[in-house]
Amino acid sequence: MDPLVAVVVLLAILFLLLGLSVWVFVSLFAVALVSIDLFTSTPPLRLLGNIAWNATDSWALVALPLFIFMGELLLRTRISERMFDGLAPWLAWLPGRLLHTNVVASTIFAAVSGSSAATAATIGKINIPELRKRGYDDDLILGSLAGAGTLGFLIPPSLVMIIYGVLAEVSIGKLFIAGVIPGLMLAGGFMLYLVYAGLRWPEKAPGGDRYTWKDRFFGLVNLVPVTLLILLVLGSIYMGFATPTESAAIGVLGAFLLALAYRSLTLESFRQAVLGSVRTTSMIGLIIAGASLLSTAMGFMGIPTALAAWIASLGLSKYLLVVVIALFYIVLGFFLDGISMIVITLPITLPLVTQAGFSPLWFGIFLVLMVEAAQITPPVGFNLFVIQGVARAPILRVARAALPFFAILMGLAALITVWPEVVLFLPQLMRG
Image 1 (cartoon, rainbow, N blue to C red):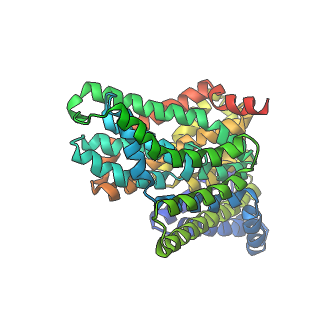
Image 2 (cartoon, rainbow, N blue to C red; image 1 turned 180 degrees about the vertical axis):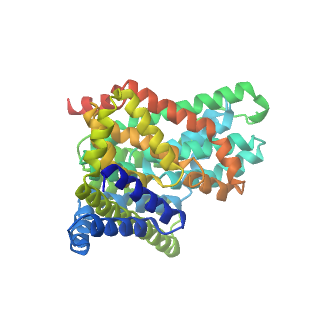
Image 3 (tube, one colour; image 1 turned 90 degrees about the vertical axis):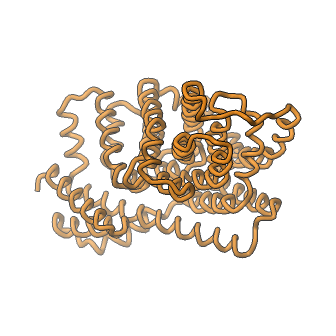
């Protein structure tokens, strides 16, 4: 079978299974095993064990369950409530007022959780009732929380960066460092939009909260614990004291101590944190194994090479190629979660962008932005469902409210494409 026809058939079968609500990892395994059996002479079951083991047997992947466990522990502390109390006195004077706490608190929590959904859920549980009580516009509340929640994937440590680093054989430490500037720029872009909205529609962000300098300085006390945890986790990596896996272990210890200090850790909450970590880690591990098997099947069939040759024959400029890949990921994001998007498509898209002259390190950050966009696009944008559940608002309203933040994400993706130095500056500096 022609490789281009084969990839269309495989994707059609895969989307059919996903559309029938078959679990992602089952769909991946099924399509891969059938493809190997039909289109190659290799016994599929002989490959299954070896590929599943090789895909998940990585020391770097040990950081994944540790960061997930850290996020689960923090999810059960009063950290988001304390962040709101600490940030509100410092942000109330800006146009947009306390809406900025959604972005800044999400940025801070993202630096210790690594998860987009956990960030949106944790900050949303506290901020939504507080902002609604003060009369803030619901669309701005929901949209800013859905958008800012995506920072959990871009601000290091990031679960998506760990998975990309393992699959693409890129340094996870460098990926973490590369995400800092784009992450802060994205948070700044979200805040600029809220400033614009506050000036354009002042009635949507009413005043009323008055804070003294005493309130501001006392508020800093609430930010000290989480700031120390960020310094422990990220500082240990950037200063060269620990690998990402070791820093994840440090983070778990720090989160455990914070939970004890806040007196929010009970035997039941600890059990729930462990179970949540096991479920999430198992799900991700099965998806990685299934996608690796599918990638192997496509390799046997010559699909990545044929696609690369076909796209190269189109004579696209490197920027037009990135536009095509971005559109491809935006469409995929309508149907797949971010982790599935990466593990399924990476064998095809990574060779294309590297042949075009882009760095695999740069592509990792670009891909994270595409995954973030998928988090806030219906029908399966996970952040939309998280905010819908917390706010008890219609899903389409949340999706509409998130549109300006989706546009800001795309704007940053375009900016780092034209100026890749935004991504590469800090890793080059640290290497130097």
